[in-house]
Amino acid sequence: MNTLPNIKTSRVEILAKLSLDSEPAQIDDPTLVELCDWLWGEFQATPLNLELSILANNY
Image 1 (tube, rainbow, N blue to C red):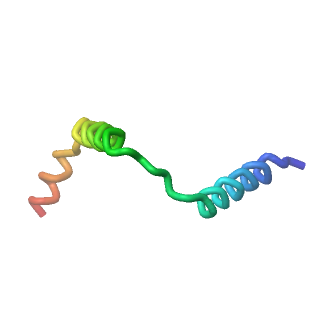
Image 2 (cartoon, helix red, strand yellow):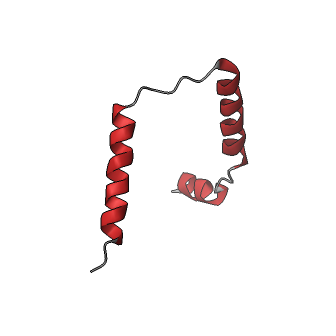
């Protein structure tokens, strides 16, 4: 019998319970700014499918 799916389910359940029962993280302003800057940079670096946009506008 393969118990790997049961182990993964148990871990997910444990993490979900910890997440739901925990207090929200407190992030200081400089760290929040750094996180936002990083996230914005990642978003800007994401390649856009311009061909799909052009095709969508033509129909």
